[in-house]
Image 1 (tube, one colour):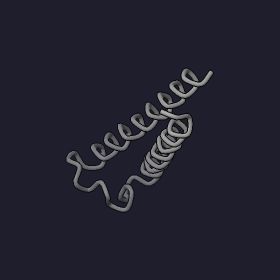
Image 2: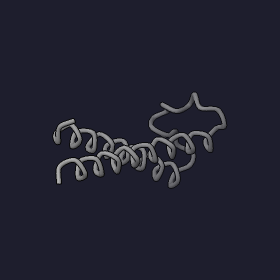
Image 3: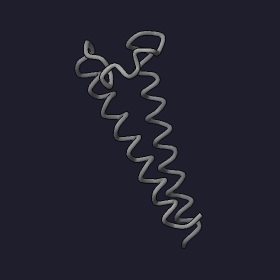
Length: 77
């Protein structure tokens, strides 16, 4: 992959990380409001299950970002 491909993948991972992380913080501050405008109402387990799914998405975004960063620096040093 080219360096611009790794950079694009890193940016997408950061967007996922920031978006899901912000939703988690908003959910912790105001627990009565729906997370991401009700997009995760289908998740079983209620509010706790929704936070677990959002936390998993946040961790996936973090892993994508770190992996793309490491691959980019390893390939193009």
